[in-house]
Amino acid sequence: MKFMEQKDDRKLILVTNDDGYNAKGLRAAIEVARRFGRVVVVAPECMQSGMSQAITMFNPLYLRRVSHDDEVEVYAFSGTPVDCVKLAFDYLLKDQRVDLVISGVNHGSNSAVNVLYSGTMGVAIEGSFYGCPSVGLSLLDHSADADFEAAVVYGERVVRAVLEMPIDRPLCLNVNVPQGEPREIRGIRVCRQNRGFWREEFFRHEDPHGREYFWLSGAFINHEPDASDTDEWALAHGYVSVVPVQVDLTDYARMPLLRRALFTEPEH
Amino acid sequence: MKFMEQKDDRKLILVTNDDGYNAKGLRAAIEVARRFGRVVVVAPECMQSGMSQAITMFNPLYLRRVSHDDEVEVYAFSGTPVDCVKLAFDYLLKDQRVDLVISGVNHGSNSAVNVLYSGTMGVAIEGSFYGCPSVGLSLLDHSADADFEAAVVYGERVVRAVLEMPIDRPLCLNVNVPQGEPREIRGIRVCRQNRGFWREEFFRHEDPHGREYFWLSGAFINHEPDASDTDEWALAHGYVSVVPVQVDLTDYARMPLLRRALFTEPEH
Image (cartoon, rainbow over all chains, first blue to last red):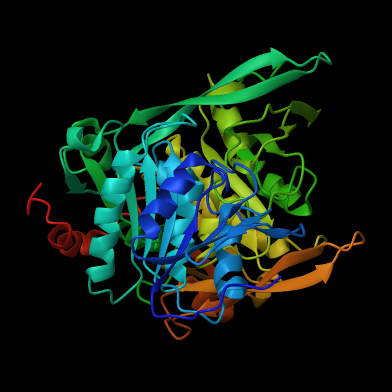
């Protein structure tokens, strides 16, 4: 397999997603990306929603080039979304400078705690590990033929700002776009992640062989529906939400209590 | 299927993992848990390492009871590690008060950024969403027949402290135990998550059908090997590391710059 070689000074944008290389949302992300440079797409062969930051440790993975022209080269990879990003940075584009990662556009919201379950945000986070600004784009519409126009308009606006920002440390953005036409959207709000979680219902049925099976179906419990500085609030009120994401999960406020409870030395 | 009913005032401990219901490390976690009350285990049918916080959205899932006595009841579930926790809280134990979740003992480290990829920590985090203190236990030994004695000794010490602590909001601990006998371990350190990431190497080979495949194999890049307040440092120096974990990923320090870059209103 021969790979596209760097032959000009256009920016290089890596595009990926968790809905698979054939998803309509991926085409929207490519549309955003190609306005800023040439595009390499490495996306999963199949739909991988809810895959979080999962990686494939115990299986071989297959790569194929789906299409290519001077501006856009598309690969499908049999791994998880994060596997795709790792393959792109550590193999396919190893000797090239990637200027930006765009993940998405996801079919469905990744606001609030969804950032933890989301393959879309899993790859955006992974991209930022490689020192490359990353933007995860999601549209609040699960349907396969959703209208991505607003996501393209606002995605372009966010990406332009990111490429012009001074960036001194990893940058990762969780961008969610409400349903509707661009003119219906009230603007962009920079937000914090809403607190809440998913409570599940398990549907129980019998399969054709008489075995009982379960099927997950949840409802989001919002712990702070009135907090106007959160992404959930912004989306519910017609704004695009932008949450900057970092990956230090340390609960610093808990450390003194824990040190006392565990009888460790008071100071490290 | 009939489920164990609450019939006494012993504590109820949910045990799960990502290595599957048959892993040796799970038996070590059960050994810790049964010292504090009766135990319900819901663990994946198969090994699910690296599954992060993944959930199964588009497949039916199967549950079976593997074994049970008065003290320990074991279920195997065909989903991801997080699916197991959700099934436990939202179905199997729906009407019961769970006092603690123990996840592990994982075969291999979950320190530093591994917290993001780890199924073990994915379920510990999920457990804390249900308002229940959660402890993820990992041993720095990948082998199937690792010696879990130190993990049991220190796991018990941490769990005892957690059950006696005042808990006013979700508590989740990432506990890693170095290799070696208990007497070789120097104590416990409460740490912050080390900064670093995995750089991958992709092994390329041909399968028996002549198709090229890739296999992921990484090396951890430690961005701060000398920082003595991190989990990596503690483990490298013979201590058990305890990192309290929270799930607000918002990069608050980035918000003002982003607001300026995106021309949003200065204040929300």
